[in-house]
Image (cartoon, rainbow over the protein chains, first blue to last red):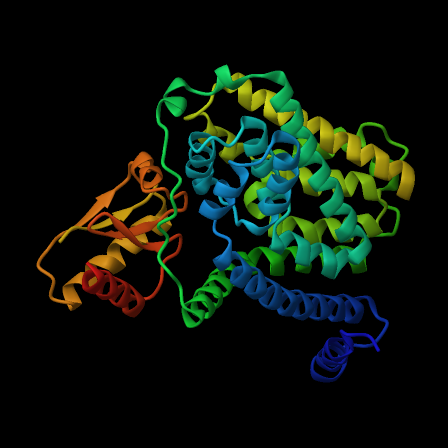
Length: 322
Length: 82
């Protein structure tokens, strides 16, 4: 049985019985699609964010830092990518994370692997991908996102560009002894509950608007309308999608539902993936903040490597998935 | 007693500062709450998450903004330990 059957039944009942819309009409289908997606996404978000917050309360960034400070570079990059998935990321935590890692002796490349994976692979994006695109696309997104994070970090290690970090960063050495307050089981649950509610409060308008516009596109825009502009045969689709994604960071939650509707109208899957990765991983506000601790050249190198990785991923999946 | 809220100056940190002031008042503690926006001080405590609530230089709450009651409990727990 379909796990989401009760939600389908609810959407059918609301659209066709309560709102008295005609089944198989454009308006009926669009409203039904909207209710179904909104209810499904919010249920998934509540469950997944709660579970991730509980895990996170056992693995705060301070512990992650101490693990990463004692790894050799190769395994460090891989671990940094994986642990980045668990850590929530907002541009205001970029500086303390960067300084904390580097000053505790985590290699620069490993730090960047973490900085790439943390915003790109987060639980909100994953739920949206899972709910709107299915598990295969969600998995492809995670794996290629991880690959980009790990490889970018390795390349930055190889380039030996520690001199592009502002000098004051290396003048401070911090003790990495852990003096974290203990949390009881009950406190963890309260923390997870509060965090989940906060997060839902923050993202819900974007998601509702994104799904709403998506439902409208689903019903009213002709299929294949965009194929001639953004189909897999168009070479400029992927780089253009990456460029458009850079300034859109804060709206990632609204962008994903919108994009899922556009793929139905002919935007190819590789272009879509590249666009979503660019929205989450390349963030203009984050770059501005990072300027306090590193030279512009390093930010450009970092953005360039990640950007090229995303473009490459986009082309590969356009070839593989059409 | 020294009660500090340390943060990067972001809205979340200011919120913790405001709620902590309220908690300290409700606990009838005469000391002022100090608001620190120097990120290096957070790092020197061995921490990387903001905001931080510290009692006598020791972290009591890290990385999130709880309700007033939780803050009161955290402050009291740290006072009794010291």
